[in-house]
Image 1 (cartoon, one colour):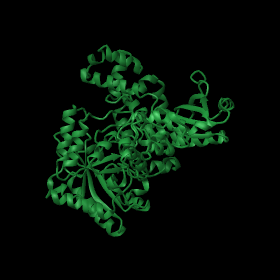
Image 2 (cartoon, rainbow, N blue to C red; image 1 turned 60 degrees about the vertical axis):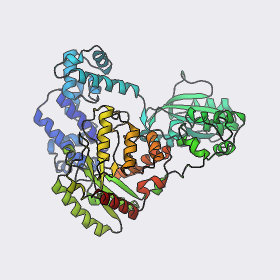
Image 3 (spheres, helix red, strand yellow; image 1 turned 90 degrees about the vertical axis):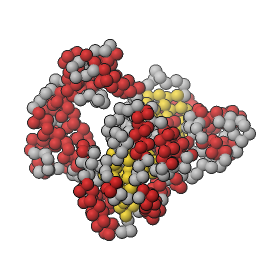
Image 4 (tube, rainbow, N blue to C red; image 1 turned 180 degrees about the vertical axis):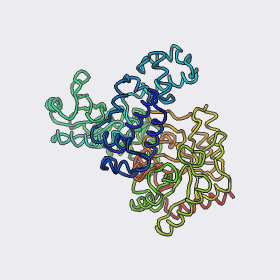
Length: 567
């Protein structure tokens, strides 16, 4: 059992304790233990009971719970609370905006034990009548439930990335005489995936269909299947799977047709013919052959969304798309100075070992008290350590940054003197997320207009499949970034991927620089950069507009020019 799973279980245990009004001292103790575990670099499953007990912040009681969790899969106190809690009530605690105490009130006062009944109570206006709730809370619960229902059975790209790759290989091994290709949303690198789709090209459709019915690494849904279309689910994550069986002679055409947004085919080629009409005229041996016939530049699958990609291809202006190997450094990262797991030196050395030229450390600022944000004295302490590490690690360089909270009025939460001490500032919103579009837009623009703001962090605060971002006027925000020489972040955390690639297209048209940032809170999270790269590719991002594809010297010169202009 990995650390993350252990921590998740303990979080649920703490929530159940609150739900059942257990001793507040014990609840505080388990929460302190969770906080300590979030910081540890130890592999908990490999530790003895004595070693767990000696970990700072645990104690013998909590250490025993973790030991039992690793070796037995659960622990006695958790079993006791879970057995007296309806499954639906446990699921209600996942709802954004209500904690265990409010769930208890809903459960006990209205005898509601599942989300379906809770949604009906919201619609009927019963929730707002409960003590401590009101109309705003009722509406927030309702919207959260509707959002969850809309995104049910969907997955983040990251969740199916390796599964899709493994399944492609398994299918090819299972059908060695056929051609197999992953298509659909996964091939287009969509941030949210509804199903895994494959094209199988073969000479005998009936025999291949019959063979697929005996597959043992997928679950077959016979009712939803049809001749030459196999439907079912994969067994690991439970994602829907669709396999279309086609003749090998039209395999390339089917791969192409199933690797684009239908809007792409409405665009016209150099002769004014819609791409969809051209596709019907003849068989093409490859996707490259098709675009060559159309007289336009080749368009990668991830860009085939029916936006500006064909216009750019007509003028041969799609750049060579950004790749992982183009990136020279990693900006927007956290260490143990705020809420990161690894120390500044560990983060720097690992970054260097990965082959990067520079690291931008940007811990949380002082307003983020929940994340151990840096007060001014700790800013100076960190800067001294960075100076020492830069001497030790040269020519690798750590840039002094901060993720400065954008306050409610759009200001940043340090004085001008402190802001000037950083090499760069990532400005982000973390609090008061319930805003109108006008309010959120003006708040961001005010921060962008601060002369010390270097990068706009996760522009809308969205969490994929969990929380919609606050509404903003993207065009106004991007225009403000252009006017104030502010870089826009693609936050590569696979749960964020914010700014949305659809608007990165507009940012690129306006000439705004893009920085692909992992928002890493641990060394392994550097590897999330790949997901930011995929979103950049969807937008048509090349390395010339990718800020962290610039060399160390170029990045340093940019920071210096920005700071000089602010003085």
